[in-house]
Length: 634
Image 1 (cartoon, rainbow, N blue to C red):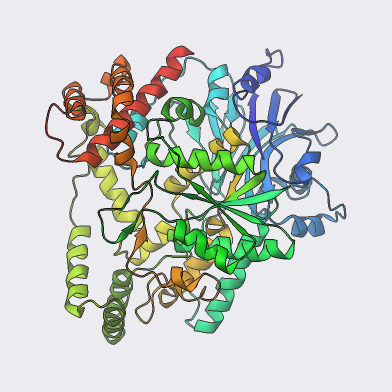
Image 2 (cartoon, rainbow, N blue to C red; image 1 turned 45 degrees about the vertical axis):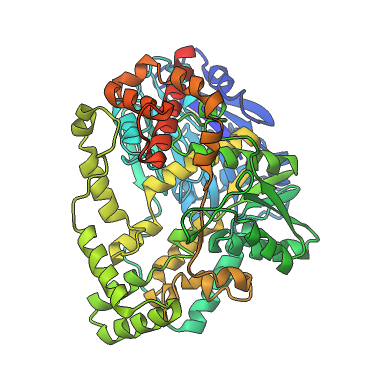
């Protein structure tokens, strides 16, 4: 994988080279080596990170004068063997970049349809006088671009583009949307970024750019009408397991060791179990990394599990080559890493409590020479999708009333809850889903910005369309499985953490094959006989430890002790928070009176009624202040 960057100087063959300036923005990251090339009006660069054996021999940018093609890529392919057969290549050590180049020469701009893996690719075709910019099916490797009068610039990072165009303004719309709520979601508008004019290429799309025109094309549209498989349970199980096995097996290409972020949930444990079995055949270990509370801590919610170490231990009992590594982040809190990590992430992160332990896991992963880090973050949308209320709504809409009644009875018996309670919950959620919600009633954002961009209305539209709740209709269910806005945010985090630590993150639950399969599976595969999240809980029985698949009423809680950590470190954090909140640029977005009130509550001058809101909002504001501060220094 790589950090890619480049620029096309349209109509200017006497241009002053900018490529080294773009490269310099990447020196803060863990890059193995740099290389640049130019062809005509285009100059491309690549900061290479070597995660696989083949990447050691990678030469990027890839330049061939005879074909008049210049290419740079951030890529790890999952279907190397297929491509090699189609291209007639027998050398098993051929680099992924060379495969891409040969595929483009043979199949042209639509070669991307034959690729599988994670990638961001830029190609300048001198004969066509066009630049092509691609991202993978789920935008797992982000790439940004700016199309100006002077030329077209692209880069994995914003900072490389800003080196060439330093007077770029902040995007008020993006920042307002980011700060409107205290949820972890930063992005609610498609494509835009924190900088006005810089856009992020969306999942499954590519650009064709020339001097006077730019066209965006979707090459993968999984939500277009897809035939549903019949509910033949054993057949569906066989297809699901074989697909899941292959999705996991294909990402186990680390040049040395492989790690995984693992909790006690179905998604990460499912991947861990499959990966451990495959690695065992190679005589290798799987290194598991689990975030746990710092010291003794119990969640106040009776249904939440704060310490998920038990899940990792259960995997260890079943798979001897699984190594447990617990990550307590001793002495840290959500503010600890904000000032160091925000400049490298290039966004005012709203996940500071999670970023703390995620960053530590990446760090420890690299220390163990794990160059690939697995995770199952997207599993809720695919391999562990399925809520009883969604299933009942589906059956009712298709007039399968007897099936709905039977499922209610089975679920009620399995969970030990009254049938009436299930139907009351369905009615309550149905009414809730058809109401306009006020998602910004506690927002500290300036009111005029909330109104200017109709943020509450837009969030309501997103929530209504995107799904992922406990009562989805069929459209919401599909949109939840393929969500470009969610993919954009995940891809931004994954790519930047990869650059920071030199570790490639892979999520088999976000593989295009898994998404396509889940979109085609019948509803009964997800919920049946009262079993929710059935793909993982029932089809994976015997692969995932029984204690984990049998956990019906309890769920792991991420960063469960983040408020306790902040309260414990209040003395040393108070001055830092007060200083960060004095950043004058904040007042362009944050209401001054609301900010003052938040600080007073934090200092204990007023009663703290809602600690969660207080601490998350303060962390979000501090992250935004650091984000502004980085650019002011530059």
